[in-house]
Structure formats: structure tokens, C-alpha cells
Image 1 (spheres, rainbow, N blue to C red):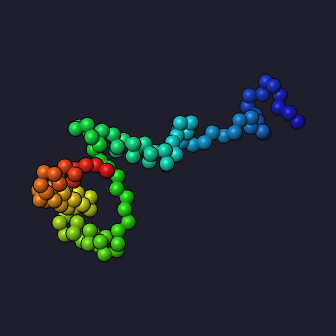
Image 2: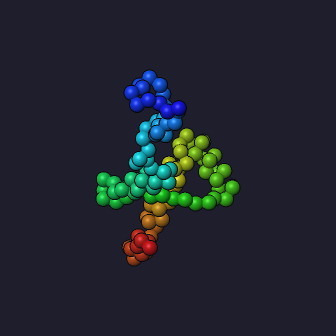
Length: 111
């Protein structure tokens, strides 16, 4: 038997709309990959001096090199990133100081 048209107290047996999902509407939600891509793009944006503020480095290290990196960083109380940056910039400066003017020009050519 069907519900009468003027009956406002009896509930419908068959819902006309599916139940709403909990939480915030997801019409413009980003996937994890989209959020990660946006994060990486923000990291690549130009810094204060007009050059990239950071560069992404993704490498595989030998077990011994990784263990050494971990030990050195822990021993000095700094992050692995700080340790790598310190070592690389120090070695870069040391190398540049040992080169003559002609060698220095070719050393700083970006490939």
C-alpha cells in the first residue's frame, strides 16, 4: 500500500536520494599524487636570489656509504641533508681554490 500524499509523519520505504557521505565534499579533492606534485613544484620555485631555492636529489648509496652518512650525521648532531650540503660545498670550494683561472672557467661551466 502506498503512502498518502498528505502524510508527513510516515517515512518513505524507498529513499529517493542516496544517503550523503560523511565528511567534507570531495568535488575538488586532489589525489595523493597531485598533492605531491604540487609540493614538489612549490619547492622548485625561485628563491630570493632568482635561482632555485632547493634541488631534488634521488640516489642509491652503497650500504657502507649510507651507514657512514647516518653515523656522521648522528655524531655531529645534524641532519643527513645538512651533512651532505656541508661536505659538498666544502669540497667544491676546496677544489675551486686549487684551480688556475682557465681551469676555473671550465670547472664552473654547467653541463
